[in-house]
Length: 409
Image 1 (cartoon, rainbow, N blue to C red):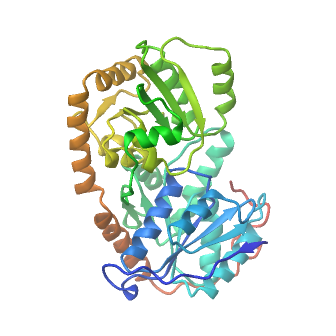
Image 2: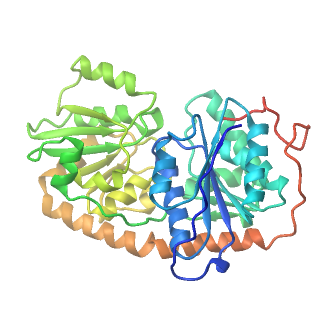
């Protein structure tokens, strides 16, 4: 197991003191970019801004080169990279437990299925409480269905579980998790200095004079990139261009579609994965969410903070963030309706600006950093207040810990 570690930095000064927060280690197996990754960075940075001590452990294929670790370091968050292999859960748990002990961690906060599995057993090996955030479910195939089922059963053992949207909480509750351990806390937002429209377009290589319809996310079935393509095929204005930012298993299909010149309507440009879209989202005249399933997507909050109008299917936790007064919501899967909503946002800029202003007000009052940290701190307090946890060594023994070939992502 390869470990790449920096010297831990002193927490940033802020409201409160370092003794008011437990020393928390966030655990994640990050993609290069994504919503869960943004949540971890924002939450760790927010805790440190409030005077607490938060660090991150990231399971990566190759330490020293992962964009997530670079972003964490840039934000002043101590990050340790652990080399992750195919189903090496026992070795990962032992390495993580050693880190938790050396850093005198007081609480473990996991994000995602692999982090839940490894983080749980490492925390138990150290006698520490463990909290999970369930960011949502994708269920792309039978294997993911199984992993998600396994994960929902596992988090029942955690001291607390944060669910970022109502539908996510309902699924975890149905899986048998105790209601008093479940906490519905939509993602919060840590403001960034977003580039203005022209500067953002220059960085993305987009024309200043075009009207840009933007889409950001993982190029996978649950995010509905195909539905976005269907919708923009109904938009024929010559000065409108569709832009897709992201990567994933649907990229090959989109590349073939683009090469074949498939589809009518406005042209679609694929930009690949880009870091720091919160800084660049003002490049878009409208942001579109075409997901089949969602929780509380971070790109939605980032667009609202930047004053970018949003058009979305009414799925998951999205209707808990915006309504018809603060954006455009369309029935799930209705690509004709989605196209019409995009046209309205483009052709009525004053109304779009009004709704964007209302959305920003909602963001500041309901999804601001202070409220988010207060809610998370209450979860940590509950987790820390429980009875002492029995230390369990992370070894491959039936009923106690995962073997290297245990089920998992």
